Amino acid sequence: MPARFLPFFILLCCLAGGMLGGCANILPPSGGPKDTTAPRLLAIKPADSGLNVSPKKITLRFDEYVVVADAATQIQISPLLAQNIRAEADLRTVTLTLPDTLLRPNTTYRIRLGTAIRDLHEDNPFRNYTYTFSTGSYFDSLTLAGRVWKAEAGEPDTAIRILLYEATASDSAILHQKPQYITGVDVSGNFRFSGLPNRPFRVYALGDKNDNLLFDKSDERIAFLDSVAYPAIADSGHLVLRSFVEKDTTDTTTKAAPVVAPNAERRTPTNKTSEAAYSVGVDTANIKRRTASLLQPVEVSFSGMPVQKIEPGRIFLTRDSNGVAVETPLTVARKPTDSSVLQMAPFAWQPNAVYTLRLLKGFATSGDHEALPGKWIFRTKSDEDYARLTVNFPEKYRNTPHILQVFLNDKDTVWQKPVETASLLLPRLEPGVYTLRLIEDRNRNGHWDPGNLLQKIHPERVFPLDRKVTLKAGWDNVVDWKSEE
Image (tube, rainbow, N blue to C red; front, side):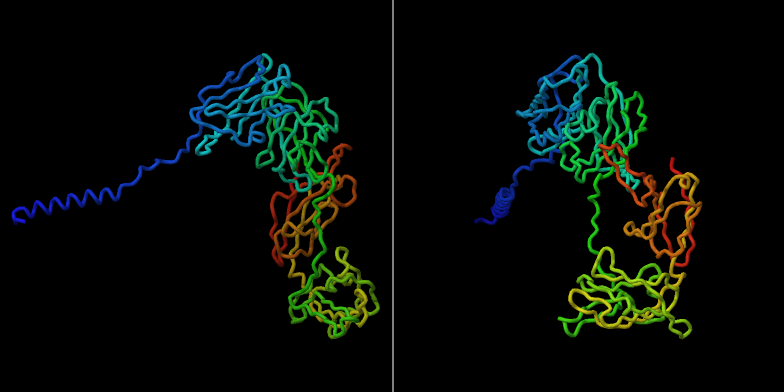
């Protein structure tokens, strides 16, 4: 090739290579950004907010293809009908079919679509649309509002629904008949009905576990008003309901685990066929350390085997008094919640004192086995290891029967006493975070009682303290209880 043509040849090769390389890197066109737009309603027939109508079918036309999902739960009509609305999608159209023969005269109906209607490709829901019509010449516009509390805790009930029945319904209607109106509650237990007619209603709150809108009386929560309620023009919010479980199925008490201190000593039998193994819940590692509670008995645990026989004459407790062992009478009994545990304690533990527990052979029989002998030396705590709490009450709670309950870490009841004076002193409380509550003990039986729907018995009221109380060892604390109106 002549030299004068060489630059042109090189340029031609470069252009050809670029074209071939460009072809090798051609990518398919992208689909663009994901569609996040909900379907848009273009038309509805019959028109929304119609008067003197009883539609059998309602047709909604959208700007894109749509489907219907979860219609049974998402599409709701108020007041309720005996049959569900049927919803069908066809391309860009959704048709709602109503059992028009069940529509009442002179009644306002509202159909909430929830998120049942969605676009076909991206599942974007058509939200928060309510279709309204009236079979009469006006729209019902009254409201009914209030709040629901858990009776036993004195806190809002947020997992419950409110049901309205005709005032003429029987007291047992909620057992076998679905309500007319239904609504939920917010995170504070508040509820509100709107668009109600001018007539009275029976009001219930129901923790409907199986979603059948009936009170099944198993472990479902229930609340009711004594009298009928009248809707009003303004949102008064004055109704108060307190929910409860009729039969206490929330008691999850199981056999208590044996309480064993970190350094508890255990007696293991040498002959498993004739001797019973057990452990004693005291710390004997260092008697200079104050470890034994002044509030609880010493527990002797027999490895899950029930105690058949107790020999109190073979159990001895002494207290060291300046080097002299002082015999201390004590009580011995099986633990109420666990028959394999013995509880041993004097009438009152002395603070910061050294005790010796001596158990002679055969002091107890577990199964067919005798317990081995043993000796335990331990020291009790002092008053400085505990906190003191004084609770002052207004006169309101002293004039009617009330019980003060004190819980440690929201779990264990550590103190309970009737409120009979202006102040109560709790001298020895373990350091920790405490919850306090008052129970209105109407029947003076010493504990909280639920209500009964058919007997029209309301649960006893509970008033929790509006804050938690943190107690530290050696501290004196005062709580002034505020009266709740």
